[in-house]
Amino acid sequence: MKMRDSVRPKVKLKANIIGDTPPRVHFPTAAASKMFSFVLLAILALLVACDSNTPKTPEAKPEPKGPELLTARAAFQKVFIAARNYAADVKPFRIESTPTTDDNGQDGKSAIWRASFASLTQRGVKPFIWSGSNAPDAPSRGVSPGNEDVYNPGNASTQVFDVGFLKVDSDQALAVAQKHGGDKILEKDPSTSVFYVCDWNHNTNELIWHVIYGSTRDNAKLTVAVNASTGEFIRVEK
Image (cartoon, rainbow, N blue to C red; front, top):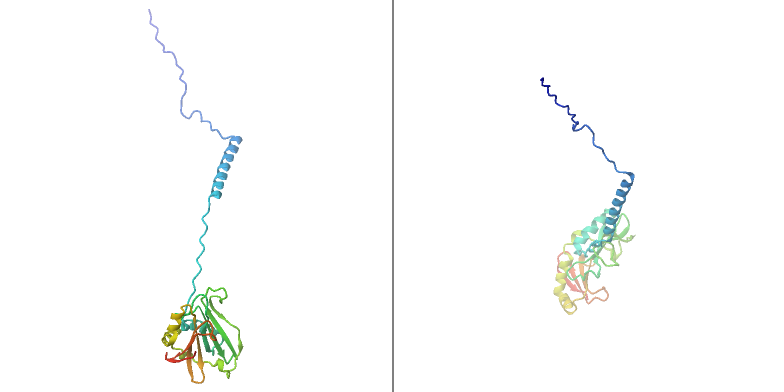
């Protein structure tokens, strides 16, 4: 008996090759996109609300600048520059401090100095003021010009002097005045203001510091005259 050749049954193999069928990509629907946008907006609104409810720290205000006090010569240098812009031939005829609530002048300094100048070419007199004061009625800080007036060279109250004569400063004049009664005035009343006037004495041809203890020259408790060139004591004027 012939043996039949065994024939293996054909097995159909299912193809399982990677990449045969591309994966499906699911794109969000319009409804899902709207929902996502709504949630995002809600989160942003919540963050903004939280930020607006957070108390903000108030910004610190800059502290007001304190008054600046200068001696006469230091302030004069500032106003002299401005006066030379008014006229090149200007010469001073008076330097004076102004009592303020910022200082009492007891250290030979002031927050306001006024220097008055005369010019032959301009035929006028013009004051220039330096201010370092915070007082409400004080001039603005820095150097500012005053009003011009007519200059009369024969007027005794506007006798000009050369700046070279001004060798003694206001604090040095105060030190001299203190030795001639000023110390007793301040000891008796420490609140007494001191102010200073410097002008030319045409009778003696000398530049004089008048150190005045009081709020005005008329009601001064004491006025001491000091030579503004040598620093020597001249006399007690009142």
